Image (cartoon, rainbow, N blue to C red; front, side, top):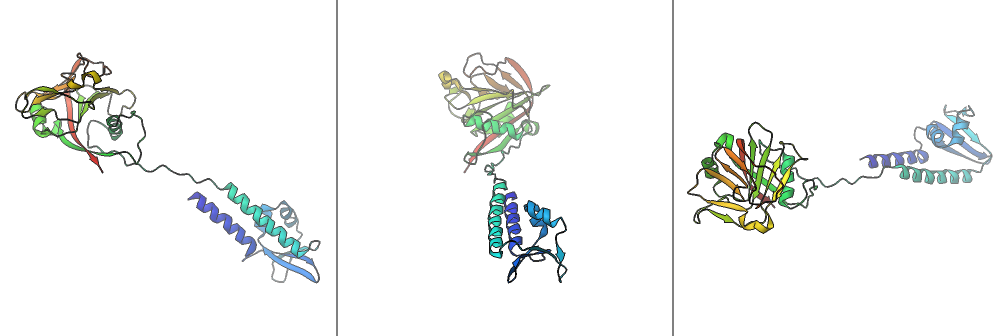
Length: 300
């Protein structure tokens, strides 16, 4: 917008030299019989020419019959004077172009991540998406990146904070993001799993997965002290403990066989078996204040 304005301004100034409507000065150049008159705007001449600034400010002009200031320049040929004006016009155009601000190309607008969560803010959801794509937490998103939709399928404060309520709402939906806010603390734990936490036919079992991970945030806006633990590549066969859907009603999700799991209103955090990277150094039980689960969809 700024460059368009300055480009138009420079063109207007140049037109004022050639088409001096509403001019306030006439320059009479040459001697009889070869005299030519050039109409101009004194403000433009004085602003751009030290010579005209000096002579036009020194009362070296007279009023003609039309009550317009007239300046006589007899010691120069009219043709030469016109050439000088044209050269000056070219120089002025070049000057104006060189002083224009360079156009700035803004990066393509990236759609903001949306998540209907009471536990985390959208900027933390962006970090989680980067982790899903195996990028650094602070990696900038671009228009080429895959878009994701977070569909809320369970919220403890409205559906009940117990494993039976979680299981009935969850209903074997995946990929899944789970978030837990701890009571009496700002701390948040969570995990991502591309596979289900339950099964109908196989009994309790470990399930192989290479893309699941667990994490923690110090609060709902923490983008500095977060911790990420991916499944240990040597123990990917123990990534998720998959419960029989018809049994174990007390248990919710379970990453890595008791690495991070819920049992009714309690969250358990430990990594004694080393099934996940040892980045979340915690061995505690927390009372759950809020618990959310989201089904994740890719948007095409």
